[in-house]
Image 1: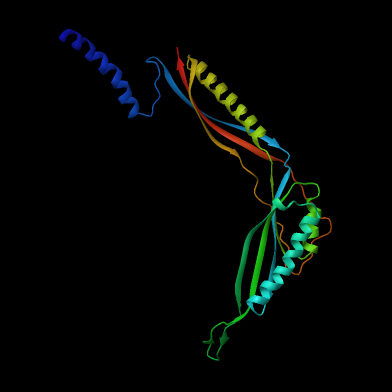
Image 2 (image 1 turned 45 degrees about the horizontal axis):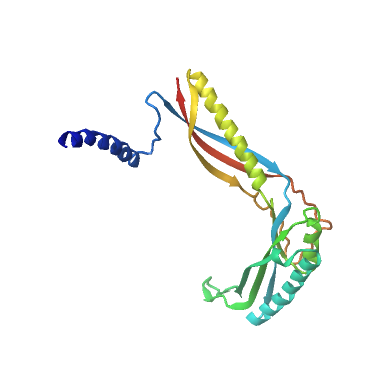
Length: 248
């Protein structure tokens, strides 16, 4: 019995030690004669956007808070009605900001240059803004024109996007993986080695919508006729970190 127990003890130790080593090391297990190669690569895919995201709103002023809010509500109802009239669905209109702030007058300055009266509240300013998703890129310019004509005096955007970026992102993934493998093969040949297997794949990035192109209209300013809009292309980008095992 002692000899059996003695014979099994080294085996148990040999099984446990790799587990302990793996728990305290981030390095993947490779063959003793192998070489670990870490490669980073990038894949891109472009598409024509099919969604324009922008904000539209109304800034109103009044002598009292109630007056400012009432004027703002009246004007904003017209803006939302216009959005519906030009074909924007209810699900694509979302309130993003409602604010009410006091408006201060100028301080009273005495003959000696000192402030004799601090600025006082002379009125109130109300703001209501909605985020809008337009699914008709070709008609986007007409939507802007209609909004400003109906009373919107704050318009920002658009940010062009893809409604479903999955196909473009997958295409970018394939491109990134091909690039990583080609680079690994290049390093292996240069070192007189060969690629044995892939150890790990880590992905970073993905579809990122383009930033908004701001086109704001002042409160008393009318939008130009037939506002031109160029959608261009949007890009899906994927970055990979791939570890390969190389061997002679």
